[in-house]
Length: 279
Image (tube, rainbow, N blue to C red; front, top):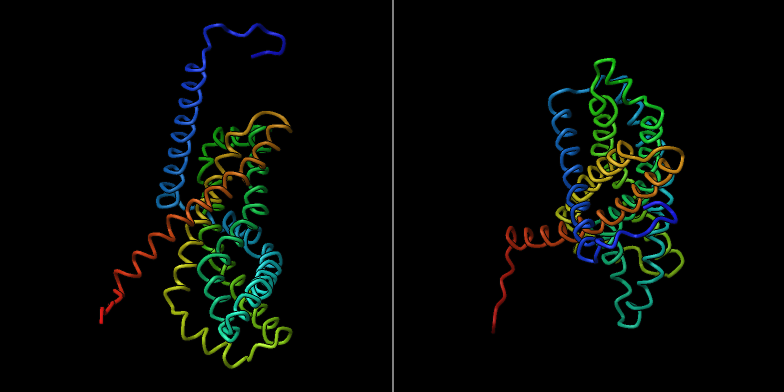
């Protein structure tokens, strides 16, 4: 509605709610079709290496520093916040198991994905949005190339393949940071730190965290590219697309983490049922 125009008296709250629901359903449908096109072109029409390798460099190599710093300080923050509670109960020697389990299963994948959503997702949305505004995407179509194949698929493949590796880097630095601060500053015995870590952490926790990062990477790529492809006109539209990309990625990461956590917990008890004896 234009500024200063008279409101339509027929627009009741029911009409406004209906328009909101229809808009949300249309947006979900648009995103579903975009995701379908991306998966189809990923399986059918693989882009050339000259397009994929630069995307991997931008998403993977240039994100290592921020991921390393994030993971290192996550481990130290967990050591600071966990030590006091364990010390009260006389369980400070189990600090390593708490820190490492939390890092591998939850905080490592989630915070690494959040940092990458801010750095990588916003950049992809802004880049594709600028190409949309300057009609470079339409120029690709005019040349007979499919924009999804040459613009979206390389970024999607790079996120799905490299974000799990970046998550592993964040986990490793977080484990090192927690050990360094816990043993050198807080005075926890290094032997018991690692003993309880190996006792309570299995390969299932490691695989769980890395599997989550696969889904996080796919979500970041799809949301960022979809926002860039459907951005508004002008610099304001590009800025809004970058902002929406980060916000949507962050919300979806948390939602995926919740449902994937429930799924993997159920899967654990299916694979290794716990025998409870009532003696």
